[in-house]
Length: 186
Ligand code: GDP
Image (cartoon, rainbow, N blue to C red; front, side):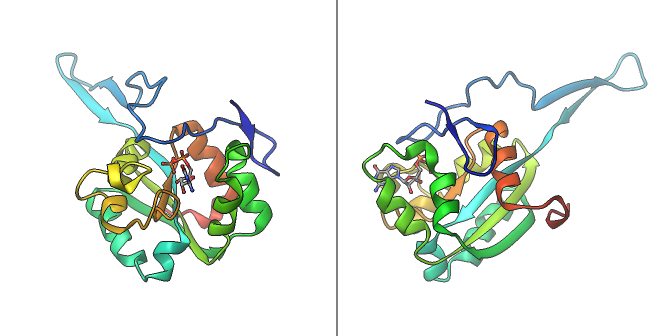
C-alpha cells in the first residue's frame, strides 16, 4: 500500500501497522561505510550519521513529558537538531497519516493528533531511524520493551506518546513536511 503526503507531492512509503518494526527492509549496511585511511594497511569504519523525524504526541505534551522523553532521546546518543511545538491542523494530520485512511482508527487518530499541542523534532545520529524506533518501543505499549518511551509513558495503542519514522526515505519526506531547512541546526 502506498500513500502520499498531502501537499508533499512525493510518493510516501507507509509505515507498516501494529508490531514493533523489525530490521528495516532494504537496509544493506549502508549505514556503515568502510573507508580506507591514508595508510594502505589500515581500514577505518565510519558510521553514517542519519536523521529521523519524531513527534511527541498530545497525550505526552498534556502530561508535561516533553523533557522526560527528550532525556531518553539524548541518553540514546541522538541529537535534537530541530524542534518546535505546534498545533497540528486537521489537514496536516490527515495528510501525515494518509496511509492509514482506510483503517478503522483513522478518524480517531486524526482527532487525537489534533487534540492538543505536539512537539515535532528532527533527530540526528548514527543509525538514527532504527535507534529511535528502539528507544520508542512497540506501537502497542503492552508489547513494548521495558525502558522504552512507550512502555513507560504511553496511555494506549493510539495515545502512545511518540511517532518515529520507519525508514530513512520516509524520514526525509516527513522532515520536509514540517521543517524548513533553516529550522534544522546541527
Ligand atoms: P507506529 O509506526 O509504531 O507509530 O505505528 P503505525 O504506523 O502502525 O500506526 C500509526 C499510529 O496509529 C500509531 O502510532 C498509533 O497512534 C495509531 N494506531 C496504530 N494502530 C492502532 C490501533 O489498532 N488502534 C488505534 N486506535 N490506533 C492505532
